[in-house]
Image 1: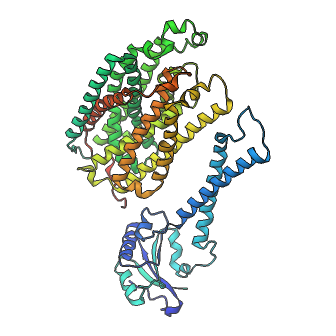
Image 2: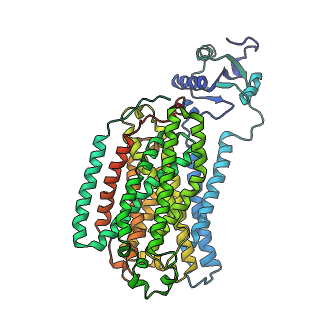
Length: 186
Length: 391
């Protein structure tokens, strides 16, 4: 089962152990098993979106939601202030006899600034939190990893995980119906 | 496909609904003796509210046949049962057809004799053509109901792909017909209560509002069905999350359309259009307008943003019940002030029969619906599409 093709790495130069799977179901079960075994620093790679995979990996990171909510509310405030400044302070103009502070007319632009701020913060926040753009990533040191974009599924448990132990973690991954478990260099 | 019938014991549910319906009917009968005008107004409100559910069940069913999705697989039996309750709505329409002059000023000859504008609109707004149109809407809805149920039955009986293709092919044009018929029906039943006033987004508001009511209603029924076999095997928290997300989408769309209508009329500031809002921005109707903004939009918006609330059956059913109530408040805000002049609308309150009549009609309608639900298996038609999904 385990590959002999790669020289064992010194632990200091080890990024993690990567297991290869045939299909999404096996990957899903492996992720759940790894999560239940207490592993935290790990990631799964699949050629297609697998529903429920983040739950199976135990990812409960809610930073992006908070960023988007704050940015959205900032967009509301900025949009509203901008409209108020334009129509009441900077360039007051009588339109159809309506009051200068005509809030119904503010709604569409304020809605738009809210969406704009929220959407941009979602994109930028996602990139920053993921460390993108990232020209180098250790997972590509596994030559078979290219197939993660065609028909193979991978789970990589990182050496930084406090529960990581080269021998035991390898045994653990091999027991999850994986095809192959390889060491991945940093 | 298995031909076995999987039903749950729904007699308690049905009896409770009928009991509420009969109690509401008795109350409204008593109310009708003292105030028959108000009785007919409240009855119209109740009729429209409960008409939107079976009609939109058909709309959502066709949407599902076109785009798929697990939400439709778990709801399909319910949506089909909803369309099969439609003949009962046709019976409910008869009293309205017989009492048009009590409700619509354009149907009242004494009134139109002094109203130049209504005389010019008479080619459209006259009792005969109104009834013909109402008949056409029901004919289209009942035809779609027949096809959607019949071919679904074929698919189950082994018709497989052929029946599926037929369902998909009728759903495209059917959905177009749905949008057109609901728009025109809302113009006739609701908007023509104030025949001088017009709004082209009015129909869309009914379509979206109807979708919201229907989604909330179906969440409540699904929650009840998921307590027993066979649905207890199939319904998972993610299904409620998906349905909650659809409810969220319809809530936002409702707010978008309502705001659009208001903004256009407010900006235009034309004497034919503004009375609608002037009427509704006085007295209790202004309070209701504020109430709608906060509880029909802001509160459900934030509650339904959170996935936790949508996955927990106990929470999503509370939100759905509340949305069904808010839909009634919204429809009441549109219908009830229409019967008063601009100057005095602010002195009128919603009548107790505006609440009792929807309970009466609703109880009876839900009873018919549950009876129809029990007539077919509850096992989802394409149950294999639910298997293999992850928790």
